[in-house]
Image 1 (cartoon, one colour):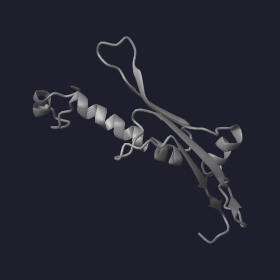
Image 2 (spheres, one colour):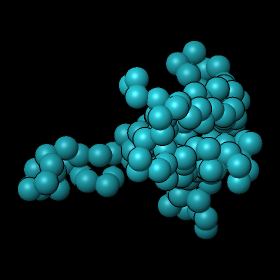
Image 3 (cartoon, helix red, strand yellow):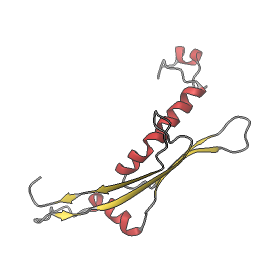
Image 4 (tube, helix red, strand yellow):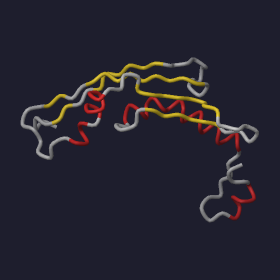
Length: 132
C-alpha cells in the first residue's frame, strides 16, 4: 500500500489510505482517459502506463496511447496557439488538423469491455478575425 490505514490516521496531508488495488484501478482509469488527454495536451504525444509488481525484475506495460500520425507539421499545428503572434491577425487564421490517436493494452476498455484502439479527430482552431 502507498499509504496504510495506520499511516493515514496520523498523516497531516491526507486521511485517505491507498491500497495496491485502488492505485491499479486509478491507473486503469487514467489509461481509459488517455486518448482525451492527448487531444488537449499540445506537447505530449505518448502516454504509457506501467505496473511494476514486487516479484518482477521490470515493469509491465498496462497501456499505451499515442498520436499515430505525428509529424513535424502536425507538431507545429498542434502547438500553434502556444506560439501564435502576440498581435491578433485581422483576418481569421484557420489551424485545423487531423489527429489520429491509437491505444493498446489491457487498460483501454470502456465499461462494457469493448476496446477502442483507434480514434480520429478533426481539430478545428481559428485565431483572429475579431469576432471571438
